[in-house]
Image (cartoon, rainbow over all chains, first blue to last red):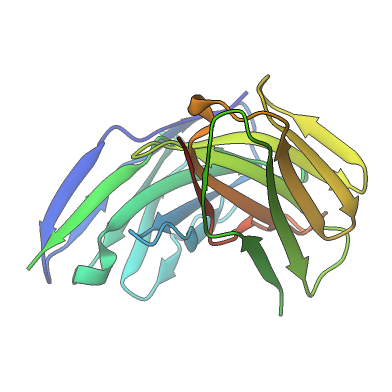
Length: 115
Length: 113
């Protein structure tokens, strides 16, 4: 079984600054996917970014990028030039390859962007 | 494009009353479907998932049940609600066999009085 751990329950950052959210996971699988989801106060779950474990290059989506360290089983999310609209809960999630799309979620990190 | 609809958006029910939450997906066929519950300020708990019509798997024992009467319809039900059933319920879908992530509906906020 897989486990996903987000060790920072809450974080805050000043608008326009950079923040990094941590995620570690435990698995015996070699092929898998990792995701970050964002849940703003509206409660909708939005996919932010995905990473395939077989790719060494870190995924990037505009101001969002990841630092994927496969050996360390670490998958952190960096948000650059933070905006007020980035205020949300962020969930890290793990998905095995070729096993449907069952996700294992971390407990979440609440991010507050301050003006 | 695919869309997922979930309703109602909010619901207030008395203890002991029945429940029916509905989720439908458009623009795809034979999706995997999921029901999650989220307590306030907490993570997601997977309640049920389905890989096809009439096929329901339950992750945790509880007061709720799920059904999939049609390919793109997923219903969460209860015969008698408990106070502990309060929470935010999210439906999600994922494409079968494509190593694709789940996509979520807007959720239902359920309050039990």
